Length: 351
Picture 1 (tube, rainbow, N blue to C red):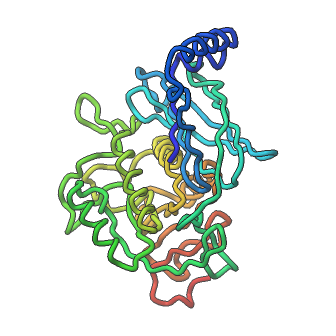
Picture 2 (picture 1 turned 180 degrees about the vertical axis):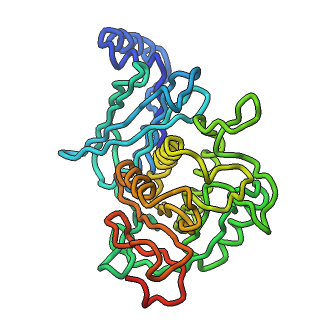
Picture 3 (picture 1 turned 120 degrees about the vertical axis):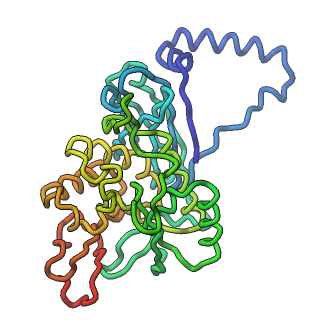
């Protein structure tokens, strides 16, 4: 991952040519008085194709950064433009993540309703992928999977619903175990689950609490999502695709995350996609056993799927998982569904 940070002083120089010129004169005078070795600073490393370029911006830390601040990044390659949502990472830091898919020079600029975050411009160089980096997963010839570069992929999947909610010791042990297996895809949840083998409180939650102790669904918890990002990256390092379950019905009244209202559901989903779409190993599973979530209608699922498709410019694989199966199941012919994620023993019943 290549990381670029802007400070207020750097921004003023980029927007103020006189300041930049004066800085250059001062630097020339300083360099005349120091050893030549100091003049040879290492170049900023280029970002590898299908890897992550991350831009960090300093901005507002007060108010509600999740509702009051909008920041986007626009990335240009020749006549192409990709627009990406930025996200608040806590402590007054805002980030934009980008996964370049074409080697060469990319230009970028930021767009924001906050002047301190608006109008940042620079370039980044993308170099060809190498080693085990074959890009994100794609459907090939209707019935098969392959990486973006055409390398065939054959699924050996497993499920560890809430392995990322178990604390560092057990999570690291899980990664060590996975490293010694043939598994190359893992289904996992964003939200915690309350069920027979998992009735403890997780170390982190996706939302902040109010002063009264209830959940503030308008404020997400950046620490929770940083941890989730770390685990997605850990799976990528092992060559494992992360089939991320965005909603599920297994809250059972413990936290209320499965009955959040429409506006907060949409904000949560936009926040998830903004940092994670740049990971080449991500898949979107809109829900697990969606038909056990009566609070959400088919209209809700269509709206949520549209958010993913509009906010993920890379076209990561996307599906939804059922309980009933067969002809009572979901209409997997919907245009946003890239593959069938079905739970049923009679596959002939699936259209």
